[in-house]
Length: 362
Image (cartoon, rainbow, N blue to C red; front, top):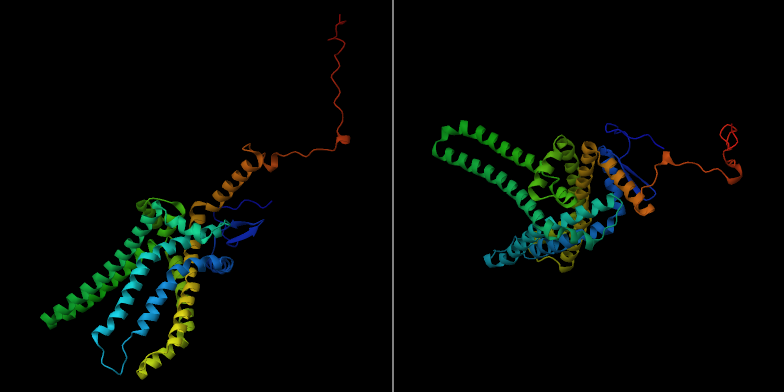
C-alpha cells in the first residue's frame, strides 16, 4: 500500500488509471498538456460530436456565403450586392453568441465526466446544460463576459475619441493628451483581460458544482486567485496552437480563393465547398482543446487548494463499501483478520470447575 499523499506533495503525475478508475494528482504544466492529449484521444468522437453542433452551421454562414458574395475587386460594388454577405455575417454572429455558451457548457460537462472516468454522451451533455437551472446561468455567464469585453472596447474607443477631439480643438494639448490616452487604453485593456481571466472557470463552477449564478462568480474568482499566471500561460498556449494549426489547414484553399477574387471572377463552386468543408472540420476538431485545458486547470486548482482528489477517493470508497455490503459498512483492511484452516485451529476445551468450586468442596 502506498503512503498517503500530503497536500504539498506535487511530484507525482497528474493522474493514472488503475482498475478502470482515474487516480487524480496535482498537475504541473507538462502534466496538463499530457492529460489534454490523452483526453482528446480517448474522447475524440464525443467531443467532436458536441462541437459540430456549433461549428458546422457557423462555417457555412461565415465561410461559404460570405466568401461567395464577397465583392470583386475589378468591378463596381452595388450596395444591394452586399446584403447576402451582411446577412450571413449577422446570422453567423448571432449563432455564435446564442449557441456557443451551451456548446462550451456541454463540452465542459463531457470532459469533466470523462476525466473522472464516468460515462457521458452527446445527449446527456446537452441535457445537462439545457436544464432550467443551468440554462439561464450559462446565459448570464455569456452576458457577463460580453459586458466585460464591451466595456473594455468602449472605454478604449471613448478615450481615443476624446484624444482626437482634444487635438482638433487645441493642438498643443496633444503633448499631454496622447500619453494619458495611451495609459488609459492600456489600463482598460489590462483591466478587462484581468476580469476575464479571473472568470475563466465560471462555466466550470456552474456546470460541475451547480451553484447559483452569483455564487458561481464568487467561486470562480476565488479559485483562479493565485494561479493566474498558470491559467494565462496554458490558455494562451492552447489558443496559439489552435490558431496556427487552423491557419495551416485552411491556407491552401484560402490562397486559391484570394487569387480568384483578385482576378475578378467568381470563385469556383467546388473550391468554395471544399474550403467550407475544410474550415468546418478544422474548427470542429480543434474546438475541444481549449475546453480540455480549462477543465483540467479547474480540477488541478481544486486538488491543490481543497484536496479534491482525497475527497473524491473517500467518496468512491464509501460508495463501493455500501454497494458491496448492502448498506453495511465493511471493515477496513487493517481490521480484517486471517482465518486459519480448520485443522490448525485447536479445539476449545470447556472450563472444568476447580475442586474448591465443585459441589463437594468443603
